[in-house]
Amino acid sequence: MAILSKKKKINGLRLDELNACIGDLEKDAEMGKYKFHAITKWVKGAHCETVLKDFIAAGKADNSRYRTHIIQADEPTTMLGKDKGPNATEALLGALGSCLTVSFIFQAAAQNIKIDSLEFDMEGQLDLRGFAGVDKTVRNGFESICVVCRVEADTPRKKLEELCHAAQDRSPVFDMITHPTPVYIKLETIE
Image (cartoon, rainbow, N blue to C red; front, top):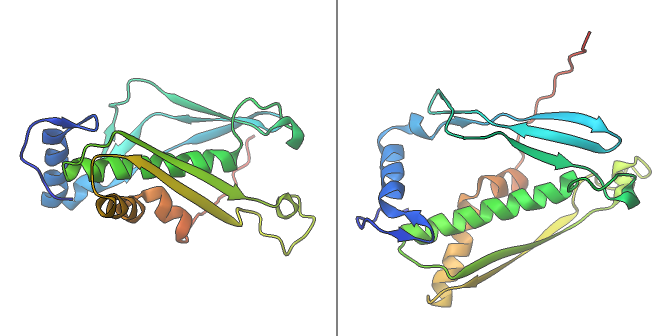
């Protein structure tokens, strides 16, 4: 991202703060090292909740969040749930859309481009026969995800296409979905 020297707001972001953050990352690679933590607990049936609060930033505990975030997850009633929240695959689509949005907006702000409206419309194709173990040849996860980026800005289409590609290139969630991410699971029994 290019650094702008103007001290103003664009797309809801203060450019001086964005510039300072970019400058810190350029000066010290450790400033960019974060560790996020989540605890998901089963409630009942298909209902569970995930608690998110503190995280590690630049090697130090970051207590800047003023509250704990709780994400409710469940399945729709047609999938034996009580619909107390989105299911995990819907939450994944939401995480992808949120991350693409933030990536797009930050890239636009860094280039001094005002965005009037932005939305990512996502659709994932899933065959439950894999999850249910009915057909081992069917993938458990999404077969594909289709994303449509809708944006309104007083900027040439070519520049908006560049921003859309930059959002994909910079989005951590897009990266995690499109590239293998090692996941290690260790079982601990509760006594």
